[in-house]
Image: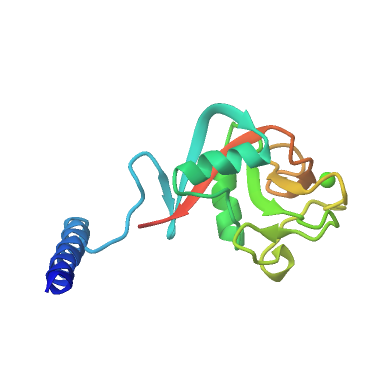
Amino acid sequence: MKSLLLIVVLSLLAVGYARDQEAELAIRGGKKACPKGWVENGNQCYYILPETKEAFVRGLYLCNQLGATLPIIKSAEQNAFLLSLMEGKDDPRLGMIAPNNNNVFEWLDGTAVADTFSAWNTGEPNGPGSENCGHLYVSGSAKGKWNDDPCSHPRVIVCQMEKK
Ligand SMILES: [Ca+2]
């Protein structure tokens, strides 16, 4: 009898939660949205961590704390958006790693960089064993292109998450 009561209570709580979610979506007109202060692009949200440059691991940790990750770029449009977002700022860290130290890069969602859009600068990636992370050039002749560099190198941290 107690377990039946528990099931009823949990069901009511679940229904209540679902209704809260529906109410929130209704307020937004049924559309998913970015958190306040984040910049929207397609179904993604971006946030530049202010006044800091961090190594890859620390940057990823800080984004994870916000429910986000480092930028995962799957199209020329997303790459151009990140470039425009960083106008006048320093190069941002990208959400890619070479997990086997062999110049073969993966996005943090586990997909191979070679399988989707890529924007490596001429001759890059070129640092097997020592350059296992990536960044976007936001100025100079390689503007909009990517370079692999040491994961310990401090970079501007941009966090990315899907709209919720
Ligand atoms: Ca390089």
